[in-house]
Length: 245
Image 1: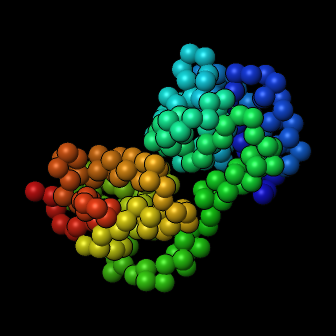
Image 2: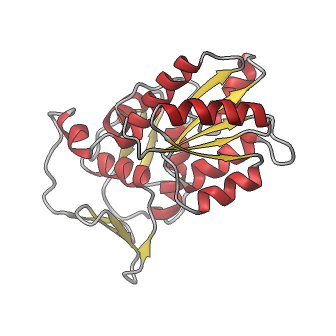
């Protein structure tokens, strides 16, 4: 892994922060630490890291709340770290958008392996994603009309009917691109994760559902009654071209 990859550690235990900072720095990572959710938010407002190691039991705002905030505003890896290893904690962590979960105490080599795995998901070149799907069709146009919106596949931008840009995160664009290039084709969560992040879906993983909800809010005339990105019960989601009613 490149030494330029930045990792943010958010943990209120100074010994844990020092241990992780020393170890990961020795492994070539650029490490930043924070002792609270507020300090973590401030660090994220600077140069966003490639991944966050986030303690669940932070004082004040807890790690789960911070993880939810990160997932809503950043496309970066999240590994939850907690002294509680019960299944319910792991489920909640994954539901708010964490990519992985480690219970203390953990082996530092296992942490490194999991961190590299998470980073690969987010840093994987888009060319590899395209090559992984040989059936990926070439669009007839590089601008796709989505009801009152227009998606430009070349510039990776979404515009409203006044030609004002509607911000998309990298993962939101990748997910929308996969859907619009396969119209009227139901895609499972497993397929969507493989095509956008090269990883399999975990039944406790809500990341696709969270992003679909955000996309509906940006392209649907009525997100509560979606017409463009439809839910296919028992399968996943499907893009249906045409203007919403």
